[in-house]
Image (cartoon, rainbow, N blue to C red; front, side, top):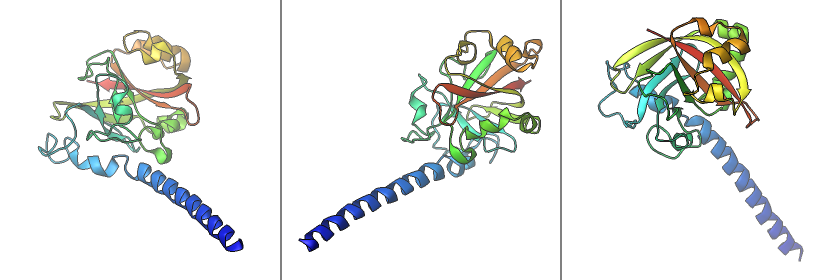
Length: 225
């Protein structure tokens, strides 16, 4: 009886240990395969003016966004809806970390007055997990530059000027409806930054706040022409 009990206990412990190992592997896989190393060699401009001809990144790539001195350096995808690239990487494969992607209502050439880009909030500053830091005024003041390369053919490159960041409810229509038209007033009233006095187009980077599904962190950049 004791031998049977010991064997059953051993089986249970092995099963639990297996679950723990799987969870550790799954966590490692998610954070090791969030695109950084896999996509960098396909960045337009890295090996010439356009992306390499053998680039496996899908033609859904609208742009490539970089915020200097952060981990944000990714292709920007755009699907026919705002769900597809939540769990699909730029190569078309299923991925829990998904992709950085442009709102389906926004023009893929960023010609709209206001464009909106989404990304998962991940630890260690991966994907758009780096946006948290911009809520600190000193950090924002020292991380104000970036670039936006349009299309896989690198048809044009814009400089970006990061100018404001705020935490907002997930249902804030002024922020999350690119067609609403009230974003400049919303930024000005919330942050004191006179966005309503500048003519440059605006692109917003949005992610979930850690541990919350009802609020978002949004970082705003001017597209300089």
